[in-house]
Length: 301
Image (cartoon, rainbow, N blue to C red; front, side, top):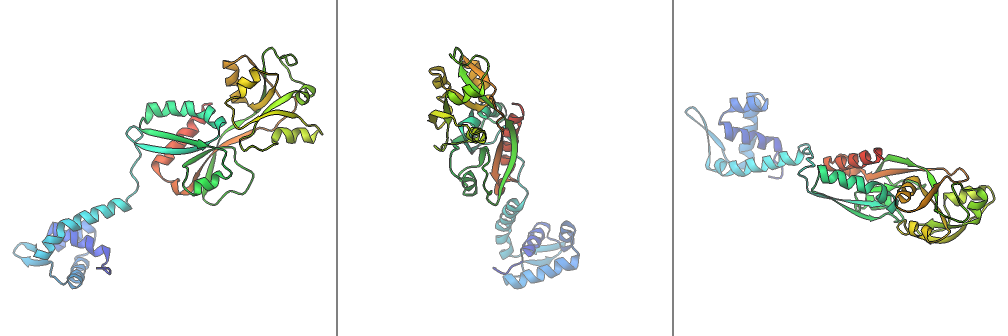
């Protein structure tokens, strides 16, 4: 049986259902001679006549009768396996997506995304993992996560990793309302002399702000480095520290706490937040739908 042509099995299935070479040929779009030739090959392969002539048509042998239902089920299963993926129905889908994202991306995107899922796809779960791993691309390739949301690294991307832009972000500065030295505007002299809070997800010193200052021969003092943004507004409220962060975070913090949102005193290049995934999921209907929802939320920011 290892050498049986699958096409012959489809012919046999049709013959068992129609009991006619003519009707089988019509159903499969073949000539009658092609169907007759296929039946001869099947008889040789299986060592049985399979179908014999009787008045009014053909009748299956005992061997053929025993084969009929298992063959039908097997071919149906095979057809399902090779068929195009079924359309994704978000309202009834039950699925979990693992998303790697730093807390900045979580803060900005998750409220809108979870609100959308609650309305359109209540059976979809999102598990977020910390976004400070050394190599997010490797996590995608290894299948540890389904999506990565964040700022792409400067290094070479691993083969098979796809990416799309979500949104652009600019930097702002935060200081507490009532700060003894900062009222509505921040000078370069103040910016360099005041102590800074710095969010370092990987625990490393330096960043785009330090690069910009270094180009001018300046250095700031980082009085506090933390791995995430959770504590930042509380620290700024309780001290004279200032912090430089994404504008969407700064504006959200300003709505909740008595903080000033200020423009940096020097131009600081902004950054792009992207969505990445591995190519093995590129054509998956559910994955495609989820990516489109993340992008939709990003576009609404």
